[in-house]
Image 1: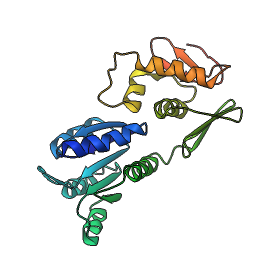
Image 2: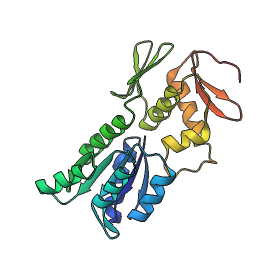
Image 3: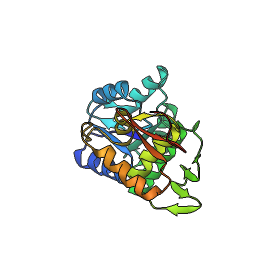
Length: 224
């Protein structure tokens, strides 16, 4: 899941991004509406977190224009404006959720994850490949009924592979969906994470290398 954070306060933007990254989400950060506009044009995000009052304008107006053009990315307004009328305006403008500062990081993460799930509601909550079960709602993985402990990043990568079972998923796509703009696509970060996952999932192997492309989650290795 990939999230865009729009916040002009550097310290708060860092805090929000760190909380979301700590839960395994890929996060891109911008400080104003023009940069947000460019990011949303280039990347398909699962959720966008907007500070309401920005030097470049009121995010309320920007989100309202987003909705008029048919853009459906879920939006969470994160703002100090706490009146009931402010919240009503936020929802009326096309916001999906509204969280008032100061806030608790766990609540922010829970709300963002809820919006991300809403964006991907067409995806089944549980994926099964052979004796492997991936519960995306509870964020649990079991193999042959045994609960496995995965890091948030390992789960994110496995979830992407699970949504494309039996298909080759390019390394570049895995980086795009599981890491943010801080990741180096040329690095071996994907290969290292896949090696860790393979050890945890055990035998027989379910994650197969597709040479020159990336990886495939499948019951058995098929033609490359």
